[in-house]
Image (cartoon, rainbow, N blue to C red; front, side, top):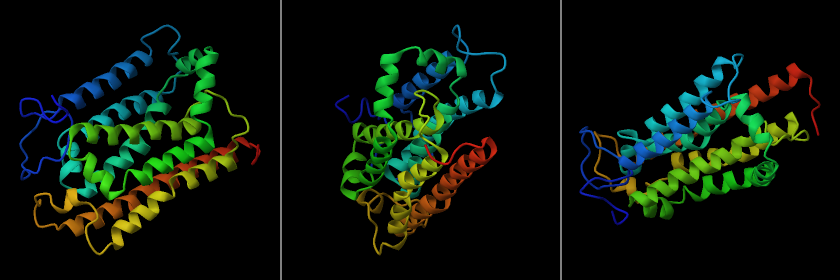
Length: 276
């Protein structure tokens, strides 16, 4: 395997340098990752005692399986291959999917019974409380967001399946840590009040606005991986990069706005105190 290819087949999507074709390409590592995610979801979705109840809201099941499907679409061919070595715009969409959509949907899809079982394991809850402490989670999410879009790092990691996997995994892991405090009821944080949550979401995601603007106004392509990739159609590398900036600003920003709006209306509807 040697971290690159086995028998001419990459185990994870990475830049290949070949001209793009719409010929299907297998990525066994992606299939394994999605299979593990599906198995965990299947196990949590009521296939164990105490994990599910007849009154469980339907949207939890939808959210859980939507996370698995979205993970598959994001990582597998063709999106995975296009984002890894051809189009910065697809790469930007993959970031939003792995860091924002998949983690939040997965956490919202966990049934109440599973959270209750987790709450009965105090040692694990204490560890989660440390790992997902709001300030720490916000800082980790921002660092990963900014650092993982440094040109030298992107160009280095996209060159190998192992590097591309590391980047995807860092986005997903940082997203789980960040969204845990907003979507997961365990550990309980009674002082993490709505006004603090609004500030948390804004401060934790605002860096994507600057990344998007950077991509939009840069005079030259930022990433060598996409600048030197065989072109797809007539779109230039700089135009593709501007599309990537547009994805961050016109897709990422509305996603954040929706989350903040939901937090606000839930706060108004429940009459919670604005501060802890």
